[in-house]
Length: 260
Image (cartoon, rainbow, N blue to C red):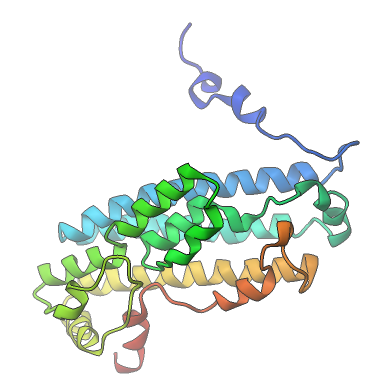
């Protein structure tokens, strides 16, 4: 049998993956499932693209890095736009099937935690939320022990003649990204003297802002739907999500704004 659109994309298998638990089925449960499944597919693509970006940064490949960041930025814009669709579901509609979700919660998204770790937002404590999932533990351990996108960004800066402080180069790979006044001076010099690097830095800032925008919109969507109640399955809910707001991926790129 020749390859077809359906067989290549495995459409029958894909469209069989939505299994509403309400009985009789609540109309909006299918929307809820589809949106979250699509999010996981986008997360998979983002992990793929950030993996490529790491290689490009370490190779000092400015223009391919810009191209990858442009794609990532557009994916993040799509993630935000999908919240507009989810918000067509009223709080009453969600409550009609919420109890069927039992302990399931978006807080348990392994791929999103992988993304955070990959981007330098590393917190070993987050592994405790996946203690019963060996595959999740293994994936998160691997990301925790890998060099982050920011570590590879340091490679790029050095390829452009920047002096990356020794304390950043020697820090434990499991530590989260931290800002550095010394590094900011080097970044600022490149920003002023290398137009191509300036574009790369602005694209990185766009991606950073895009993730912060998605976090903010996600918080407001959850707050609009369930208020300040605990999240599904007893997860921390809005209080935890609020605490994650406005934590930049690339703090040095924001710190130089008043000196450009």
